[in-house]
Length: 453
Image 1: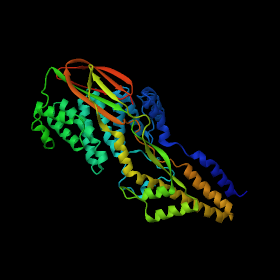
Image 2: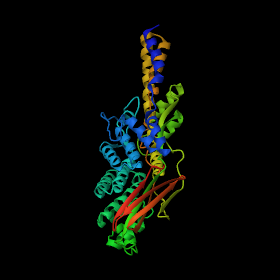
Image 3: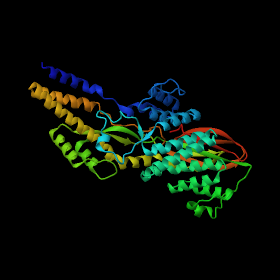
Image 4: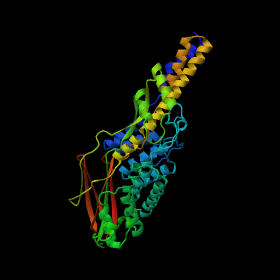
């Protein structure tokens, strides 16, 4: 048997062994554990992915996914109330997290990695970068570390300016973070920066409770911002009472959508990758080449990362403070806004997947021609070409990386209460959680619930 034929058969036999499940497979265990209300098990699973024994440990040799896995572990640690360790992981991730720019990619850049585009260091979607500082601000507020919260607020503002070119879906996620920033500066006694952050929150679309917070601040301090003039000219807010304290309750519910590999017929992929929209789209020559390979039967489908809603999301939420129900509508809907961001850039992701598959198809044809020329045997050439294309296709794992432990929604409830101990009970999807908090006269406290998803 000719040597080239033996090599081709060996390659075909090994093609099925090359591929892997990618990040969708890696993250499934801890995503499911958190969804099931088992954050301890989720922590165990993410530590396994990081190849460490304990939450206190950091990887000795960071890999391409380390920043993302630190985001995941930080979220899980926050759900467990281990806020100091959570803050550490978020800060380390923030230092090493680049932002994915889908608005100006070229064919050469998006198909740079021939076998798989998840071989590169993880780059976060813009809204993930913006939410990182927001979620870490929650840690510092729960810890009562107002200085740390203000640092995260400043970092968030810097990131917002850096990402100013992003579409409204990323910017609209700033409202919740800007509200928390305003709260942090207000509790620090800095009413000027506080009202400016509240103004940023309104610019980003606002959220429930923002108007009352602005009116209260204006009543107590006289702080104003031209963007909030209609609220601050006649504030009619709640006056300060030195015998009371401020309580902010944060509840994180559901799980954000996650990416998983999806097969798409070539014809549908060409249409989606050619539709007008932001980012890279197929050129006329690339469309023609794809249609040629499809007609030959060489290229039948492509794999791309599809954003999928988590199963079992949603449910009634109730917050009771000392037996009184507090209103807590969603302040940030991560699910709907991440879906909107994805749908806007879906064509670019499919174009990238199709470009990679075209590269493989070309490689298969070249190998076919070379092998046929060397061996003078069409069967040898065909098998060699299929082997190269098959191995490369089997190795293709679309980039399914995303911050999967993010909640689907953030809720906040806020009020002033007499100094002393107070009981907070949260009920979500039939499961209760109860905590007590002590308010000092003129003080404040933030309580976070995020282990019920």
